[in-house]
Image (cartoon, rainbow, N blue to C red):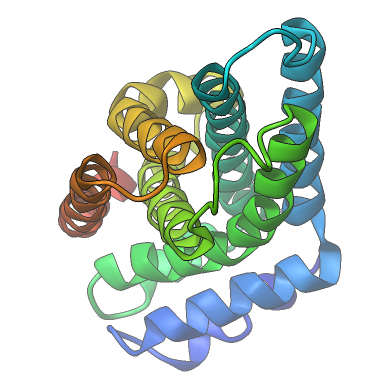
Length: 244
């Protein structure tokens, strides 16, 4: 892959307006090569399949247990897929020698983080659109409760995927230059993402089993606060992560 394909749009703008150029460039490269999308989708589907075979179906299980198992499997798969996607997003530019040039453009480096975040968010949402229904069908939880509020389920998915993308994008920038980045990225990111996993699993399982409730509202409010805090903190710390 040529260097111009990797950062052709990013060099046209600087500063905060440049974040949209970085995001558009990443989305365009992802659409052309499909490396990140295919890798994350394959990995997510593989995790679902392995967990489904290990659980052995939902025979003899109640509604709450089935919903909890399905939610845990889906969000475990998405968390691992986010790590794979963030690693590929930075590795492509590192291999092409374009990452250092992106950091030399004038303007705050936080804009580069936000651009990379938006570029990763698109493919992850596509993977989530496949993983969520596939996981619910695989574990027999698609009709676990009466009248599942799908709008609330979509909101939970958006907030959860954003949290995964925000955390893995930041740690992807830290580990991109390291030899053992494939092992270090999950090791560093997953402890930070544990609150997201817990909140998304709880909210999803509750929605599937009992529908909307004040408990779901609390978990979604927590997810929103976590996402906002993570994005702000990562944007401020991103220049130091690049220097490290």
